[in-house]
Figure 1: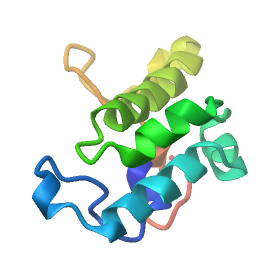
Figure 2: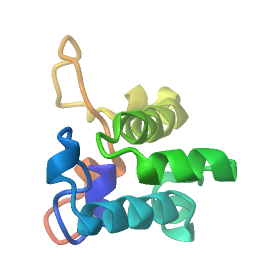
Figure 3: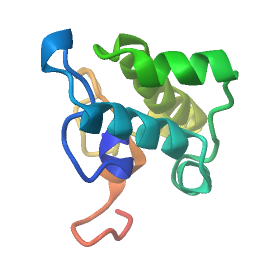
Length: 114
């Protein structure tokens, strides 16, 4: 969900190096820039700081395992900021279920908050 915020194209990774495309590398670069952007701050309440060596790693890793972990960490961090609000899980949801939370999930169609 975090990746979709910043990417017009669906694919930013491929586990098979032979199937990797320059467009996927460009997408990872765009995604890393998004994680450091004011857009992330306005939607999640924070940005991600990273050293240049990590930025290069996130962009160059065709499997994008570390980048996927960072995307999960962004959602986990946002959820933690909502710990006083049931971690962002709406009241009508089953509390015994596991949830992947994201501010986008708390919007009605058309982008209006629930």
